[in-house]
Image 1 (tube, rainbow, N blue to C red):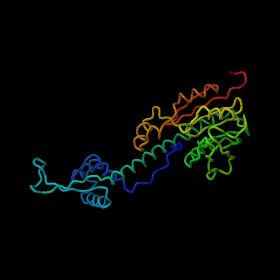
Image 2: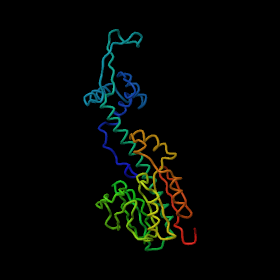
Image 3: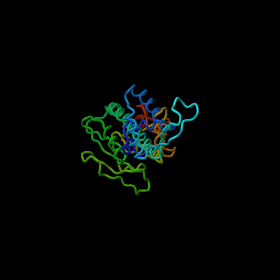
Length: 306
């Protein structure tokens, strides 16, 4: 996962009615009147006519999503006229792929919708955290260089007037070869290309720092947080926003299963781990959950405060 939002996969070619048929066939083959009965039970009696159903089944068969087979009725199989063939429909590999495309799209959309709803709450909390700052204070926000990650970070920017915002466009490549692209950045906000292990700002340059990158991609988390602390003035607040799978059915089960992410492809850093690292460097560390996201912040220690 390259950012805290999910790029929406390609839209499926099927419509909702076709997807429901594919779903009903994904477990086992079914004959036409059986499908008709199930669909009308779900959508309301008389909602789907046999003409409508068989017309759509024919189109889906033509697209290669389903196939049909004819079988003679077996002894004891209902009150069918002797010798009449029963037509069964089953999903094909192509149909399963189409169903999977739809599931991936809706899962990504569901997650991004949750993210959108939580963004406003996170931004409002950030504004409260930064109310101690005077006008002309400089706030640095570390952003992911993906389009989705950058757009989300822009939504989180405090809207308090008088604050000077600085973008730290973070590369996760610590070899020095990864240079973030500047093409998508706002021309109104100053930005600095940076690496997670090397932020090119002098000590105490920022009055406050905010991190909005996926921490699971940071190889040396303690080094990254140390850099955020270094470039922040003593007494300044440092806030970190990230995703947590802890206690999230959506992230632990739905997204992980649907998108096929392995432990290496999808993971998050434990909130307790982040809290431990921050507590050794900051004072008054606080944590707030926003569904699948959390915000953790604290104040850089001043001389004589331990």
